[in-house]
Image (cartoon, rainbow, N blue to C red; front, side, top):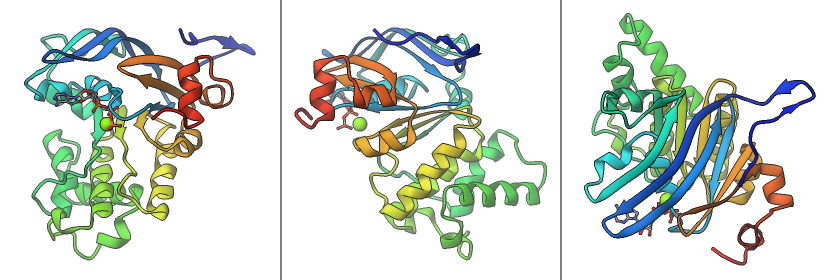
Length: 265
Ligand SMILES: Nc1ncnc2c1ncn2[C@@H]1O[C@H](COP(=O)(O)OP(=O)(O)OP(=O)(O)O)[C@@H](O)[C@H]1O
Ligand SMILES: [Mg+2]
């Protein structure tokens, strides 16, 4: 259904980071994800697009077991990261989520100070040797999320006191502070103005150097700007997956074409 990694001009394409096969998700009787197979590459930005309710967030949440926290939700199939089954009973979901960070559709800062929102993860995972180490991690994460200048004079103020767009950038800073290997972003820019959106897109591009980034977006322009691979979902099916340029200029499936030309969704 989609391209398998190829060797072109003697250069192997990027390694596979996440591999899902036969993935099904049910909420009670609702079959929200239907037999999805996908190989997501390392050091690549992959965009998930598709109409509202097609299952983008649901599938994204499978990749760090966030669906475990929803009682009625049942996930089936095989999802591997670096070849390891992330649903294996010996996998600790807390450790998994440090490696596979997530930024949600709605900003959700902890009810703590701006500083502690960022320092929390690095502290519990022992990433800082000293207070000054931790200060550096906090500053660098806030800078990468393009919010340092706005908060540097009020690091001890509550994170919940920031504007919606600032809270979202705080959550992005929190996600990158633990240096995850995979970053899942669910419409990370929907609460941001164009300047902050551009800064976050720059950050995404920078993160791609080291990480696998998966971003859900309703903006085709954003998908085209930031991603190298695009997956189009429709009614719980992964309809088409391939190079972003190809999906947007030469879609193979009628449903993809209708969506990108604005006829569905
Ligand atoms: N917690 C839940 N309980 C029950 N059903 C759910 C839950 N979350 C999602 N669903 C259902 O699963 C399907 C897929 O929803 P999902 O949120 O994954 O879509 P989406 O593609 O992210 O949509 P949007 O673009 O609007 O965010 C929908 O039919 C939705 O109603
Ligand atoms: Mg969603």
